[in-house]
Length: 330
Image (tube, rainbow, N blue to C red):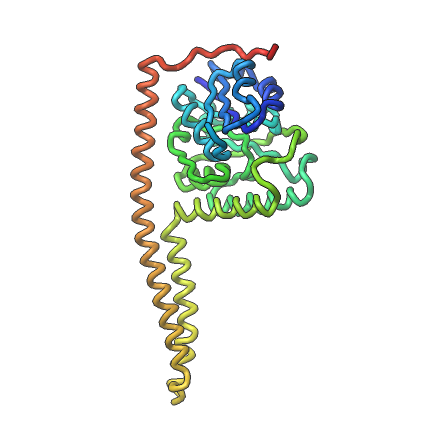
């Protein structure tokens, strides 16, 4: 059983060593533990620091492509390296590496496909009242959209099994956290949460400029991901609302027509007819979008099989590199 711990990085040369030192070297039920750094276009020598500290795998983006792209690159590289379980953690040492055994335990026990580290934000001293409230609200929304019981939806401290990783395809340009959960819920994966500890923040987040920027981008990501997996429901709901709104002016016109005053209220009939037409068109769009979604599912199944074939070929060719011991920088 091989565990690969991946760390997306962007200009993290200063904090990366402390993060690496906190990672576990042995876990019961795990035969091999390796570390993977995704250098997302850093300009401060992050990759060189990773090499000096003996990181087993390094993936480097030529330019900064964002957290979601870095996460997906890490998943692809970890699968190619033969990972049976993949853990994602942040390079700023926000998450306590001592909790990784608890994070992978539900997967080892066969109870979960994905495990999310719950930072227990409501009682966490490292989070202010405003952030606690926003996190609780956001997690409740994600719970409903994804049909999961995750209590900390935007936590980046998470573990995923090999089989689940082969079925997850991140398309967002902002963050992978909420899209991953919505995909997992749509694909009926077993997702559980475990309580974890956090360290005091070392620096402000580089993912977003401010809270409104984070809310906007996260909201767009959630809406797009949910619409991708529920297009028929989305368009039928929109069409039904438009059609119901169209019935009101039509009923109004029919009332005046019945009492002999319909000539002065034709505009109500026109408005109602337009809204009804929009409703029908929306429902038709939903049917087409649902068919496209079915085709996307077939493409995802094909990509999943390609990933498995590639992993098998890598194993046969002996492309896996023997892990080097993590060492302290001179």
